[in-house]
Length: 203
Image (cartoon, rainbow, N blue to C red; front, side):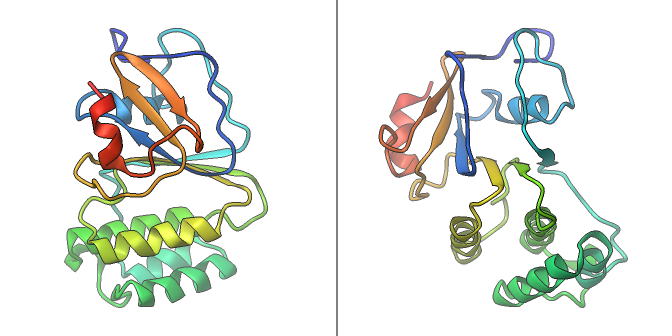
């Protein structure tokens, strides 16, 4: 995959099932490019891939109308069940859903986007969520809440989550690495459990 020149190529066939998989690489190695390729935004230079389900990309720069409140965003974009769940978790995350989007902090804007992405997966269809740097602007409290949520919501949802290399203590069971121009899948039994333990394998 890449734009005009190849950034990385998969080492053999890679098959990911439901659950959360972390996409790891040093900055500038192609995490966003891979997610955009899987979402169909850009075409692969060679080879191909198949997505068995509805594919959604949560880009790092996603925004909503600055005059709308988070509550209105949820009500507009989610079904009834998703809206109730998003509002419940928003309270746990200390997100003020009555405040207009434009007045929210960077971290709280990110919470809105993550809640919309997560709770749009309630209609019974298989879903693939491609999350590009979803933890940008979030504190450890919010990150832990989302990771706990993902652990509970495994069935019917595949999440591929690109991660910033600063989160050394981030726990992960399945990892996709981009290193040395190659894309490699480390299964749960092969992968170190924390991001910090994987850094030495990346270049």
